[in-house]
Image (cartoon, rainbow, N blue to C red; front, side, top):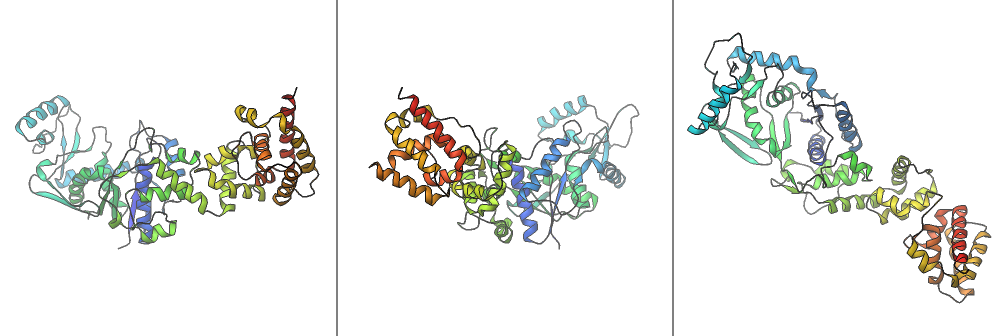
Length: 463
């Protein structure tokens, strides 16, 4: 059997981490089995579905490296198929038209709950064959009235539901639009889906879908219901994939974190894409909920910032910087800055915050640092520093190192006497990579210009 799985988001919102994790598990399962990963957009909610959400979902899949193997399927293109299948079920006696009014259903619901039969109100027209001309109707599926239904779930194990808990749910509304549990069955059967991997919150839907499969004469797929992710909120984890990308997370970090959110392979934490494909299986998915941890996500991202080749990371960082209006070139200098700064931030965003002085002409200097370090007592040494650096033949780390150390020796001072004043003058604060690397990567014109600005600040404090 060739494995075929699908991820089926609704285009009523952006793709968030919970959905991205489900998509990833489907993708890895398909790749592990040399199967097909498909994408179906469930866009039957005409009021809330929006093209911008569709575009965002497709963009997120492309960025995460999970593009589908076939053309994207849209439910809105398949309305005639759903109506045709509903009519087939009416013809076979497995579904029926229900002409009940809302008032009749509500009254029957109260009586059903009072008697302990919580589903009886859905069957008011199950055994009737009259067709009132002045009423709209919905179409309901005929649920089994006795026995039980069992799902052999790859994650949750064997789960059984008694038939008495199942209702004759609506498969076609009065306006002719199909309902979720009906569309899903028709789509999955029509797309030859072999395994349905989705969140545990869909487990109750699965039992309803089973008797739709049976009524339509379809063989049900195998199921795996993933644990939900706890700890998500509007501020934690519920942001879209695009928002994490804009904050400077890279795909390797996000994918690695999502893969470990409910799945494990021994004690290993870091996995390449190839390793995930090789090792992933539903037998490694925990049946209990995974806990979202922003700090752990940042850790994964930081580790992958360090693992990527510097030139590859520099290329991605350049794209990130361009989108934030920094004028940078993808050159050896940027690769050098990347090599140094990758360990000083957990995201491309933090790397940028820690190093923006490399990429702009004007900087703001921390007032407290200026007060402490750009003091009149270093005026003479600072003036000479600018002179000797300006005379350098080669502006590189080695020559800068030698020149500054020689200066310190002539003045009988340690490197500490000049290092922090230089940092404050050239970067705006006291936190930067190594002094000599920083000056070299700033470049001669920018470094000397800022040193001269620092000199003017020192001179102004001697007056």
